[in-house]
Length: 161
Ligand code: COA
Image 1: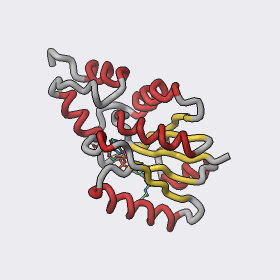
Image 2: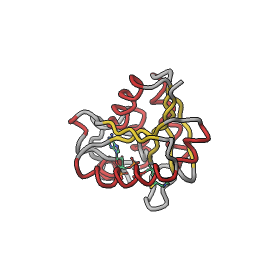
Image 3: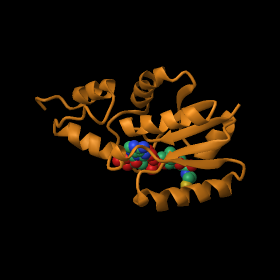
């Protein structure tokens, strides 16, 4: 049983993240999408809300589970019996950060590998900050996030605010 975790902030989950999950589903037996609390980022959705949205979005993938954690990603991976950590690599600009994290995580846990997957080129410029900004100014996010996320963003940023 090859189980991997896909950690991230997912504030909110975007179509780019889903693209990565699809690729991971084709490669591994079980994927645990795990929401991290990132104290350095200002959050729009609580961890509970992010888990709820992800759970709904991931329903179409029977081998995907969603949870959350607070701590080191390698500790969580080990507790779940995961053999690897999935991360998305959109552009060269992601590489240095991902490389540093991968090497640090390897130092912390030699037996857990980082697997970098490239999403479709159409998601190269996409990130959650852009989606949050667009939504805050009532821009159209429909091409970037699933419908349920679009609806939740509209609730967070009502037109009359
Ligand atoms: N498509 C679209 N956007 C994507 C994407 C994809 N395929 N992959 C990543 N992104 C975006 C995210 O939306 C996010 O955007 P934002 O910064 O505008 O919100 C950004 O890229 C990167 O965020 P994310 O993938 O959520 O990772 P992160 O940098 O917030 O890190 C953890 C999350 C959990 C991996 C990291 O904080 C961590 O490991 N924390 C635990 C502490 C730890 O173990 N530290 C030791 C490791 S050095």
